Structures are given as C-alpha cells and as structure tokens.
Image (cartoon, rainbow, N blue to C red; front, side):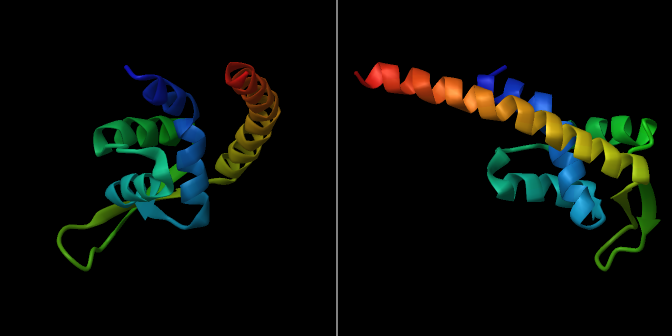
Length: 113
C-alpha cells in the first residue's frame, strides 16, 4: 500500500462526512467528488465499506430515491451525530496537521541547505 493510500485511509471517514455534509450524495457521486477534490482514485470498492461503517455508527443515513437515469439510488446524508463527529474530526485534524506541517516543512528546509 502506498504512503498516499495509508494517509488517505486514516482520514477518509472525515472526508466522506465533509462531502456528505454539503448535500446528500449516492456512492458513485461521492467517489467522483472525492476524486475531483484531488484525493486520487477513491473507488466505489473503497467508498461502500466506509459508508456501511458510518451508517452502522449512526453518523449517516441512507434513503432510496428515484434516479433520472436507471434504478433507484441510495442517497446518504449526515445525522446529528454525524455533524458532531465531523466537528470532532475537523478539530483533531487541525491539532495534528499544524505541527506536522511545521515539522515537515522544517525538515524540507534542512534538505535544501
């Protein structure tokens, strides 16, 4: 597994919650939005286990809705607990990313000398 994949795996739940917090989405649409945000190829095979886990923890709910093209689609939206979890994840990310970025940038400057 690449370093990028390992890092993404650690924060993917938060990224999924953040996308869903904007508007309800179905699985393929979610995968595409994450890809469009620059997270690389986040396949449906990766997304659906995340969605199932988030649903199991009552952070999201799924609702079947008619599709304009084809079979019904399951749209996911955040629960109140999901919004709380997203706030917690965002806070934790800020607390971790600031010192890590500072450390890595200092390390990068050392290599330039």
